[in-house]
Length: 393
Image (cartoon, rainbow, N blue to C red; front, side, top):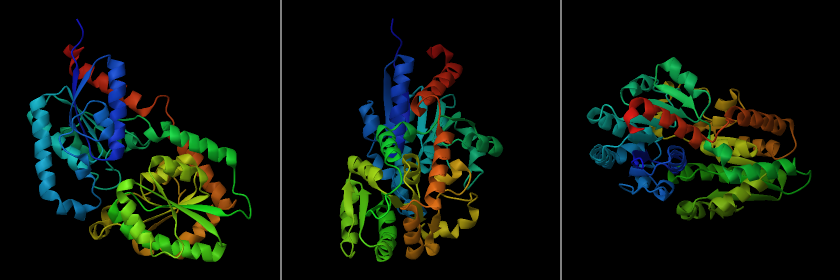
């Protein structure tokens, strides 16, 4: 008699979380040898694993506290809707993936009604960055945390949070990134006198793009004034293509737009240096070996709360290496001249470029694990289920 299917509730509110969740679910199927019935919220990757999302998960992808406040009534309704559906489904496991403003509120509601339910949080919330008290609060509704950054287990012990395991980062196993990394290593340093290729990465959300692209345009003009003919490439996602084209239409020097993932990775392979928004893309660039300077503008409310932020850097490569690898500029400190001069130094064979690439090697080493993150996460999830629900096996 074959074992019954595992019933898993999963919630992912971003594309990155959707991919992480899907990898783990696929590994869970393989390791358990069972079918898995899914309920919850997710995107294309989780839907490919069999999820029928309760609603379009892009509703949860917002940037900044002010955007959350504007959409608060809908958020509250979606939290209630999601919690109700999961409670009615009576799953064996609740897997919440990133997007803590939404996923953790759902988990609290579900745990209040189903106190014995196994709850796993994939991607540790940045409690080590601000609002540290959240770590201890998580004990009430999370059994274990699967972290994608190597310093997070120690931070959660220090803050009194749930048991946390470093499972590795999905980016270290992405084929396109591995291929790009190999191509760049084979190519070596930029040739003296060659026309440089600079990649511009202003973010994937409309608000990010609108705030950063104008100053990126100023940096482009300054760079060309200092260096002459230059090729600029700007990867973007299809849903933001219109916004990007409208902004760069007024630039004297227009970048080549790269639409979609395939074109993006081509840009990563060809770029001599990059100018990028702060975020996961900095880690992608570091792992691929693309020297980068970072800039970011936060919304007004985050600026008011700046005194609550506990970390010394916002750049993931810096946090993982545990020293300044990527230079960062924020808000009123952003100057086009500073950005263009960094692009100048990083797109030539300089001491600054070599030091950054050495730092990127350390980032790679610190993220390496024996198994892909999804497989290690699935193993830990099955161990938790065996402890909490021995009759299930």
